[in-house]
Length: 187
Image 1 (cartoon, rainbow, N blue to C red):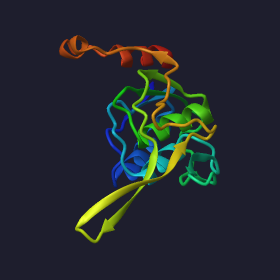
Image 2: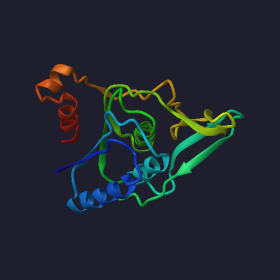
Image 3: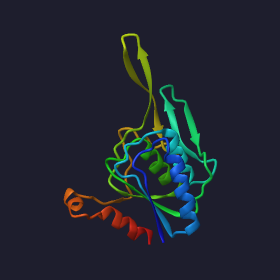
C-alpha cells in the first residue's frame, strides 16, 4: 500500500517513464509514495520540472532561475498532477544533486514533503557553453536555481527533515536504515 519510485538520473526518458509509473501507482491508490533520489547527480532540467509536475497542483512554480542582474524566471508545471493528492516522502543524500535537488526542494516547498536521509550536494546553477576559437569550450554560470520559496540550492544543498545515515557497513550488510525510516513515516 506504499508506492515507490526511484530515479537515478534525469535523462531523456525520465519524464515519460515517471509519468507511466505515476499513472500505474495512482490506479492502485497507495497510502503514500516514496520518491528515492539518493545518489542522483541530476540531468535535464526539463525532466525535473516534468517529474515535479506529477506531484503538485497545475500552474505551480517548480523552480526559479535568478540571473546576475537580479531578474528571475519561473519554470512552471508541465504535466497534470496525477499524484498531487498522495502523501510523498523524498529520500535524498549527499549524492543527490542538481535536478534531483530541484525536485526535492519543490516538493518540500509546495507539498510539505518530508525529506529523509542526508543533506544534499548543493549544485544549483544554470550554465551555458561557449565555443571558443581556440578549439575549446568555456562553461559560464549565468544564473542560480532557487526553490519556489526562494531558497538557494547552490553551495547550500537542501537540509533534510529527518536525518538518517547509511554507512558503508549498512550497505555491506544489505541494510537501508534510510528506506526503513521512510517506510515508517509512510505508514
